[in-house]
Image (cartoon, rainbow, N blue to C red; front, top):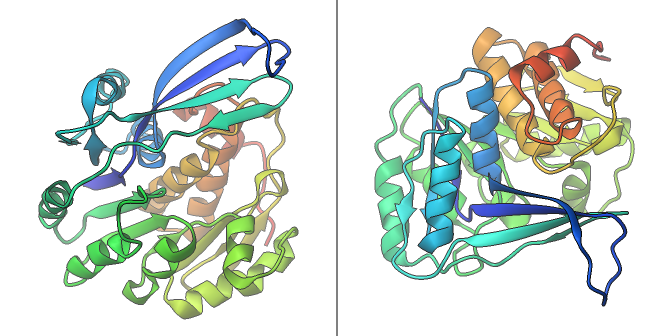
Length: 304
């Protein structure tokens, strides 16, 4: 079974404005409410690709109830922990001349709730897959992801981590199967600016030296790079298409890679599936369907 964890899920409220004028009354051209959060996005793409999974995380209040309802209405399976206080966040995404995001803080997650999550995760068995995705609330320790991996280190569980800074670096001693920074996040870790695919390779290998298995680096329009666990290096320019929505593209890449690996146990196929899923979601108003991902997969060849 595949499990995803989203510590701070949200309602993503997307609103279109013809020509945004700050300080003035603006009227929307469209509005959209969707369950959001990196782990939930991963789960949604896995569902689209026919990969059964369960979304874990925390929800609170009336917004939390709507996250659960809308996620399950889209076909998702969840096992959320309901917090006693606060409300789950609403993230506002304004689409106008430029795309502007306002992300809320979310509820405080107390120690009792964290212990409940750890109990759920401690039930995972050999052969399960766990995807830890996104940031955690400021009230929680940066060691939380590594605490989870330490607890599960006696089991044969494939763990993927999509996080930044200390959250990511702290898991390296526990040898995650997959990490997926973008080029800016990877550069921030090592104090450099990385703009081209070739520049990414030595720094991705440094993450492997720290303990990562596969290092998948997303680079928006520049494409992506994979340093595989077996030493192979894959890179590709971004598939061609019109970008309509950047939200969830990186999460889609993680889901596509995991689905591709489970399908064929082949790094080239997993990389191409990851890049196809990420690009297909960027080319769609919503997270990509299986058909959209398949169309992108057929449209390009990998460089090597």
